[in-house]
Length: 405
Image (cartoon, rainbow, N blue to C red):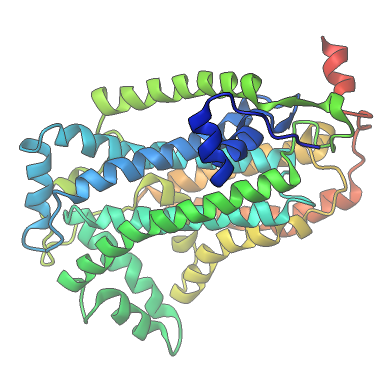
């Protein structure tokens, strides 16, 4: 039972008596009981939160100097880079922050897949994580259009046109997204407004995600439930120190990209002003969309490709029920572990194929990788859960921790 502390500072006590924010933070960030065996793969959740804050903070300052108009957008970005004080730094942080955000979120998701963090009683927590990823993708796509370079314009044209594949309502959806009958100024205005809105929605969903996490407590590498006070340690100082170390590594990689390789993830064509009359030879989305882009292109039928692309994400919502094993962690599932690594390699292959031209042998490889993606989630995961014989689970979290010590 949690007992609220007594605050010695009179100002803090006065404020907390009227709005107990300090007590809430003390309960959820200091004495919050966390499993004692969490490893560094659990750092990526907090790193994702920090990346979100960085993106919102830099985005606000960039928006102050950006002009959402097709005649001025490209030049306003160039002005930010050249004339605004530290504008180049803000833009490079924001550009590379998007990639860093997706890197830590993808690692966070694959960690959840490996350790079974999507299983009961954390299904809603998992759902919220997938919603966060969808909001990130939508916001990132809108943001990529804003510089109004060649890849921005043609990327917006290609991706929004996908909705026309849906029967009856498809054309209406495309017209609504465009704000007219072509990608033009109303489109840019819509995307700018949504790009500014979605991070605020994202903050709200992240808050609910954390609420769900604290309601059912964190999963752990063993995938077993904590059974007593000996299985927990306070979040502070043990995991705040661990998170601080992970943050230091994260910021060093981030700083290297910003100061030494700021365009590592970028497309050269996006430094050319948008021209509706000139189509780039090879239209590719940002790297974090490439696996889904490969799935889209692997299906010859346009509607089938769109359904496969969206289905590749939506199928994750039912993963808690597709996995029939009673054991969460792959640590104790020798067969599932090997299939997990094969699935991870398959996702990298899809990412590579998505960046290549739509020609052989890439088309065939992409189709094979797409088939395996769905085969793994719809067939292999349920069958392995039925037929696999897991290794014996430890009696408690403390047992293997104290044994290793």
